[in-house]
Image (cartoon, rainbow, N blue to C red):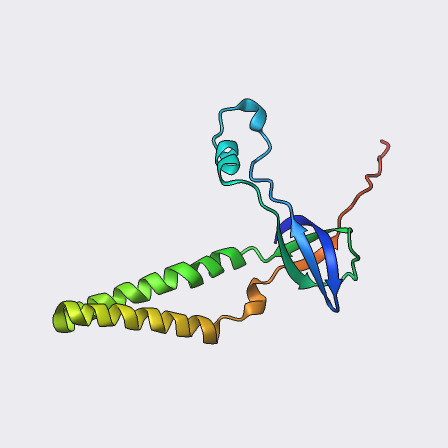
Length: 145
């Protein structure tokens, strides 16, 4: 499960609007040798608010941990980018083989339409939705040894 700390901005019925704080870096910026920090600064850090199911009954201002299943990111990337590219290329190659350039263009378009249709019919939106996992632990208990 991929986890991210977030702040509840507001609640609307069973939904809570949360804002995840993007770190953009790995935390070892003191070394100065990593370009991830410079890249993050170049593109800026924006907070993004989105709704999640409020299963913890969190209130505005509360810190929570949200998460998505580990494979959801890879599956969504393939569904949104890989599958359309593969079907477009397959359609273009099949069209080229059958009837030249005009058929290749039609085959590529047909592949894209097929990919779009597949995404609309087969991809459940809930599979890629973040969920509220727990409240953020604000207190740390010292364990005596």
